Amino acid sequence: MSVANILSDTATRQGERPAVHFAGTTTTYAQLWEETRRYAGALRGLGITVGSRVALMAPNVPDFPRAYYAILSLGAIVVPVHPLFKTDEIAFVLRDSEADLLIAAAPFLADAGAAAAAVQVPLTTVLLPEGAAPGVPRLEAQAVDATPLDEITLMHPLAPATILYTSGTSGTPKGAVSSHLSIIEQVHCALIDSLELRVDDVLFGGLPLFHTFGQTAVMNTAFRRGASIVLLPRFEAEEALALMHSHDVTVLCAVPTMFIDLLRAADAASSKPHVRLAISGGAALPAVIHDRFHDSFGARIHEGYGLTETNPVVSFNRADEMPHPGTAGRPLWGVQVAIADALIEERIVLLDDPAAVGEVVVRGHNLFNGYLNAPSTTAATVVDGWFRTGDLGVITDGLITIVDRKKDMIIRNGYNVYPTEVENALAAHTDVLSVSVFGVSDDRTGQEIHAAYVLRDGAELGEDALIEFAREHIGSHKYPRIAHRVDALPLGASGKVLRRSLVDQFGG
Image (cartoon, rainbow, N blue to C red; front, side, top):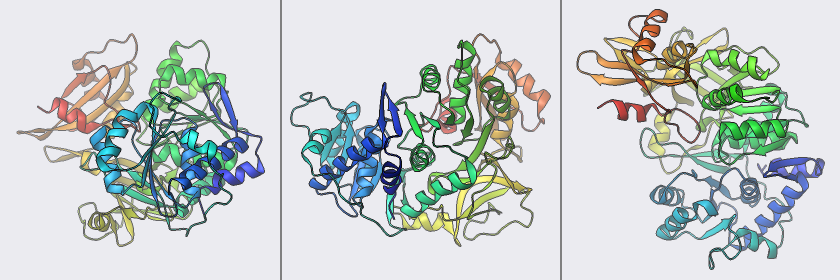
């Protein structure tokens, strides 16, 4: 099998249907596949073949799917690179993945070119205007003269398709190797059981495609169904809202911070799109956002849960059922989820009562192959056949609820405090736009509970007033004693709030 068949087969069956909308231009499936075949021919001319590793550093533009499926169609492996990485970080990925080639979009060429030179990896570009940088190879030009690919190279189902580097919040980034099977099964589970995606749906493409959420849950799934995607290179709420309106976007996949920003933008907009299906992932969504979004956009948010290592979805609130806000829904077909003792790391000890808080463990077709060049890390993470997610959760009536990251749990005066629970309580205040709760080391209590919050436009809420609100709504052992009003919360590339950055900022 090959992930590249996702695009090629849809181009054969539905070639005249729109695949991508970008910058006022629509590309059909037939056009996108023909362009991909030419890119594949050019890459083949550069020596890319079965098992080659090709790093891809591009924003959400049509060149991303062109290059992505071209690489896969040759039996090579895609290594997406974070668009915000600087020279040393890019060089690390190239070196660790043993990349055979780097495809870098023009906006990133300065750092990408320096990294490629430092590691001695060949470089080619996309989006570079002709003549702008003489001597720098342009993939578009190479594709013009190349013989288009005639036939996709089919791979063993468990052969590597992608190497996705984790964010590295707990140390050096790790390359998670994913197979053709795990990605394709994700897509089929979504289409058969979860999403009710239609061929005439238009999906919002603002999630970064270098990340597993945007790459598989949006791009691969939409292309398998034959729906179309509106690409947005950089998420800005006002621009996103305008694109959603002008293209009649029906399906919105986003992370919680995007939903919060879209609600803020919608408050000031004269009109807003009517979304048919809204999907949230990447982090827990504050319960209050569900009702606000439904009131504003007319759609209920269906929340899911997953990780890079699970390609990405573990569980989901199915679109054919009323969602259960605050939960991550039920496991995908063919995926088992259980609750294990979080303190026993050398083996998996499942809890007799899954409603008790423990570590969420997963096994099934969605698991990655392991971490690249890190057998000991893989062995510590995949134990007794189960993947240890590092998340604490419970299972009640078959529904999974993620309590928090194990490493983010706060222990204050001996009591366990879960930041997500406190965040949900604080987010219910009408003046709060977004909030993050984190623990800071304290000589007296062990850890003290802090909250950083952003106000809605025009609101005035002092730090003491927020703490008093928290005291009235949650137990005395878990309300924040210290609050910080900030202009914005620090976000990672996938839109997650970086609690570690807040600890560094306010922990001194």
